[in-house]
Amino acid sequence: MLDAFSRAVVTADSKTAPIGGEELAKLREFIAAGNRRLDAVNAIASNASCMVSDAIAGMICENQGLIQAGGNCYPNRRMAACLRDGEIVLRYVTYALLAGDASVLDDRCLNGLKETYTALGVPLQSTARAVAIMKAQAAAHIKDQPSEEFAGDKLNVMGMPVTDDRCASLVAEASSYFDRVIAALS
Ligand SMILES: CCC1=C(C)/C(=C/C2=NC(=C\c3[nH]c(/C=C4\NC(=O)[C@H](C)[C@H]4CC)c(C)c3CCC(=O)O)/C(CCC(=O)O)=C2C)NC1=O
Image (cartoon, rainbow, N blue to C red; front, side, top):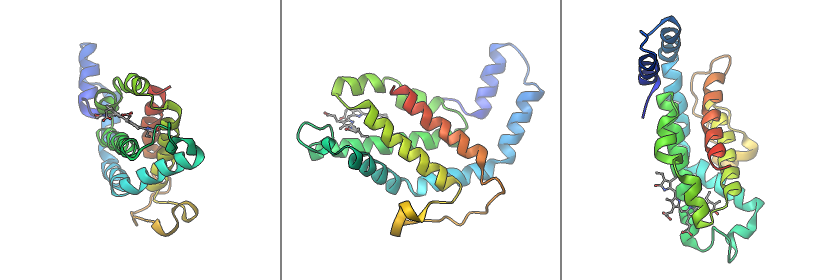
């Protein structure tokens, strides 16, 4: 498992090169935006259980066969496993965002997941749909702009200090981790 710093070291070492100007500039940027990153991580972590239950509920709403006999979210034991998996995925995406590197997500969550799901008959597309919903939720929470329309009485605005671009680069980075999960299941 790597983070932005150890990644720079491993990359430089593989080229037997010193840490150069470009890598240092990237790390300087990583440090300068460090508090934003922590706020982004906190915005997701603080809303995680609501995000997961909403994403799984949304996925099932769109495909109700999942909770009927023969569906992979039936009976309750499988429903619980599905909710747990949603939580696992979101947790590892949050770790990756904290580290600024996808390796923790790849190594500890995605490695072998598609094979496990295929063996158990867990529908990959439905899982990808739930992950896509979490991606949209995470973007809204990092921007601290969850929509009233979707959140209803569960609306939770963190009240973080807001930058002009509403942390666009962190939104993009978090989105790339969700895309990585979807790609691993495709
Ligand atoms: C740390 C990393 C890690 C991951 C990622 C993980 C996933 C994981 N999900 C599993 C099962 C499962 N996963 C699901 C998930 C779903 N079913 C659906 O229809 C939905 C589309 C979807 C939820 C989004 C279900 C229903 C099972 C149980 C399948 C079964 O036992 O028949 C299993 C098999 C063992 C078990 O049931 O606990 C594993 C290993 N375990 C881990 O340790």
